[in-house]
Length: 103
Image 1 (tube, one colour):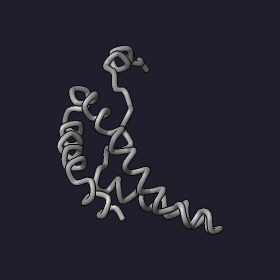
Image 2 (cartoon, helix red, strand yellow):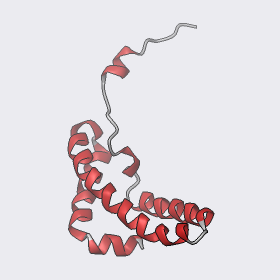
Image 3 (spheres, helix red, strand yellow):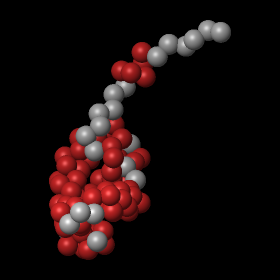
C-alpha cells in the first residue's frame, strides 16, 4: 500500500524527498518549507491509512486495524525518517538558555 501511495503521488513525494533530505541536514534553515509540504504529504498518508484500515474497523477487527495502522506508519518512517517532525518548531533560544551546572 505504501508503494502504491508513493507511485500515485510521485510528484508530491519526490518533492518531499528533496525537502526531507535538506531538512535532515539543516533543520532550522529548511523548517518552514518542510512543514508546508509536510502537511500536504501527511494528508495523503492519512487518506491511504484510512483506506487501508477503514474496512477492518467497521467489520469488528479494530485491534487488527490499529496494528495495521502502526505497521503502515512504520513503513512510512522507513522511507521518511523525519516524517514525525512535521509541524515541530525548532528554536535556538532554548539552547542559549541552558546553564552549565557546577558540581
